[in-house]
Length: 72
Image (cartoon, rainbow, N blue to C red; front, side):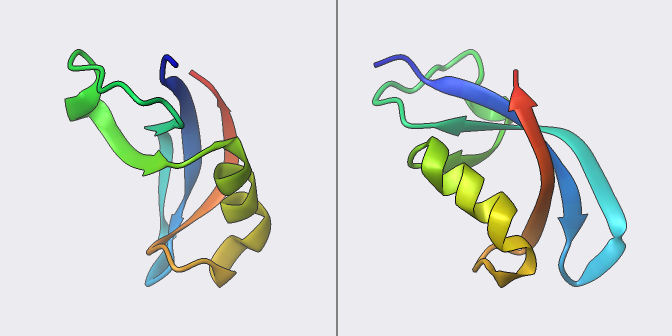
């Protein structure tokens, strides 16, 4: 399966005014894409995990909060 990529926007939990946009993440995929690997901010296991992270907001174990995402 080929990796699927998304851009996420959000903020850091410890500093909510420190926002980020268009960070590249991937879901699923059992192949490492060497062209993109250095650009990836985070690896999610599947789309459901990404959707859950957005829905849970600050309730996740991540250091960041996702406010929106879109296909890359």
